[in-house]
Length: 97
Image 1 (cartoon, rainbow, N blue to C red):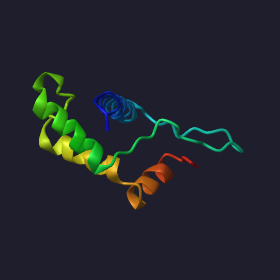
Image 2 (image 1 turned 90 degrees about the vertical axis):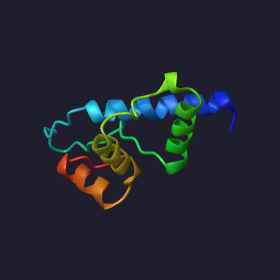
Image 3 (image 1 turned 30 degrees about the horizontal axis):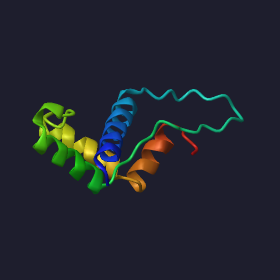
Image 4 (image 1 turned 180 degrees about the vertical axis):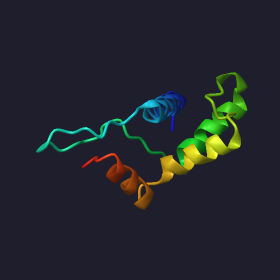
């Protein structure tokens, strides 16, 4: 992957993660409407490896991975989860798709 594309993907993942983490989901939905969440994000190990590689080569570009380990670990776990945990969170927020 070329450096420009890798940089773009790195920034896109971080921005979408920050937005998703900062959103408060309202459980108020008019009857008859389906709720579709469009700001959700996920990642794969290769993307996080690329971010860590970038920071190792250029520490000045550190994107927030130096947060306390419990924050980073929990965030990574949520970003990787495309199964039961994510479905349960969607059900809790009354998100249909």
